[in-house]
Image (cartoon, rainbow, N blue to C red; front, side, top):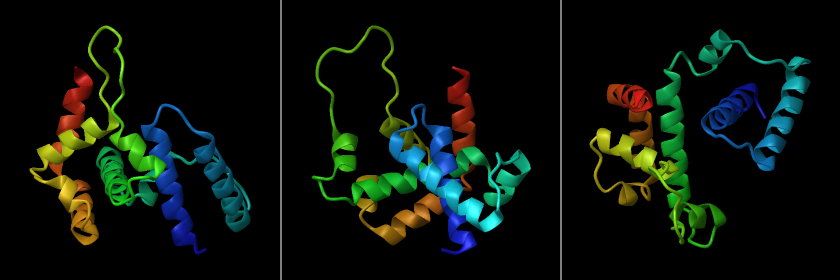
Amino acid sequence: MGLKVIQQQCVGVFAIINTTTLISSKITSKMSYLKAVILMLHGFWRIRMNYELKELIKNADIVRFVKSKRMAWLGHVMRMEGKRIHKRVLEWKPTGRRSRGRPRKRWIEDIEEGIQIMGIGGWRNLCNERAEWKKITEEAKTHSWLILFDRASSIR
């Protein structure tokens, strides 16, 4: 593996960790693997500074970057076979009663709001066209409304 591939994997894992509340053992094992690879390449592992992370993502806005990675993952999962666990979890509709109060926003609902803001219709069909979906995720990295929407929703 080259250094560029390792850096892309690291950024992806860091983006996942920053956007989730629970770190599964699978992600933890990926982190251990990446730490070992970085140790072999650089000779040391340390927590990166903010300016170093910005260099890794090429000064992109971190919120837009994470949202675009989420959209890319959504496209990947939507193209999977129906029996795969990732797809089953994504399409699962929980049964039973919910707790009192406002329902918590699901992961897919957050992404659907971003897609709606971008003005993309029929996204479920577009996910199956890999090249078209890649263009959409690249556009999400530069879409100005995504960052404004995220800040407005966090104020509530």
